Length: 125
Image 1 (tube, rainbow, N blue to C red):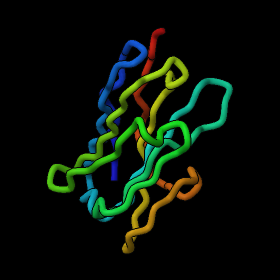
Image 2 (cartoon, rainbow, N blue to C red):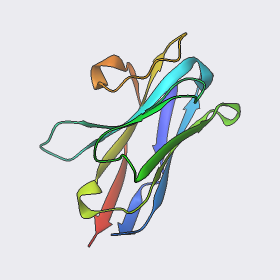
Image 3 (cartoon, rainbow, N blue to C red):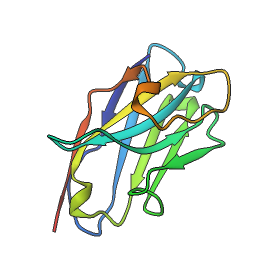
Image 4 (tube, rainbow, N blue to C red):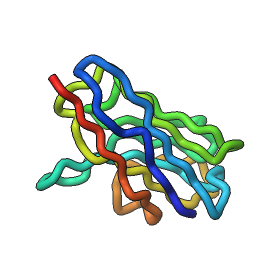
């Protein structure tokens, strides 16, 4: 599956953005999907994950309570709604996918084998 992340841009602190991850080549419903983010010079950080049917979600500590991951398998799309944005949310955001036959979630980047190209989110204070 090929992944294309989009929706990044400039936002003000306290604002919202919605990132999209478009899948092509395979049906996204066969994949668990995660969002990660990375600031230059730092480790890639887990943001959120969703099971293949969307029944289960998980969030990293920085995202919990502010971000919402969702998916529309009919459209082959996964989304990350980000609210109450803070300057330290500034990063390149990546979506990733892992084929699975279960409802498992994955929060480690090494567990994913398909990655999109990333979309830059900049939050100003």
